[in-house]
Length: 65
Image (cartoon, rainbow, N blue to C red; front, side, top):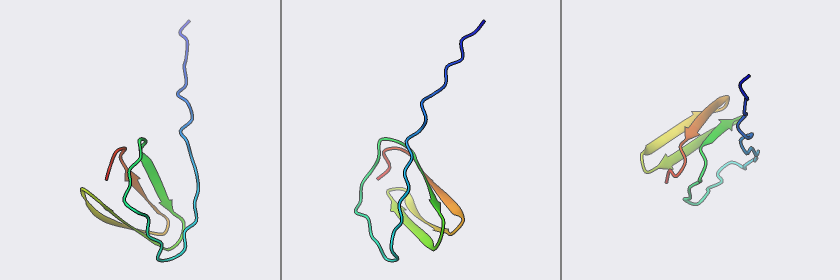
């Protein structure tokens, strides 16, 4: 019988931000999936700029500036 191994659960967190908040340039060791529950999110990286309206998500690969 084969042994089934599950990957560890990905770390998760939630944050609420006020309109107009700016986060300094940074990067993460893990990929990020950012869900926009209300308002609009604008992201600028080394690869371009994206805007996500509410009820949408953005995928940011690990080590992205």
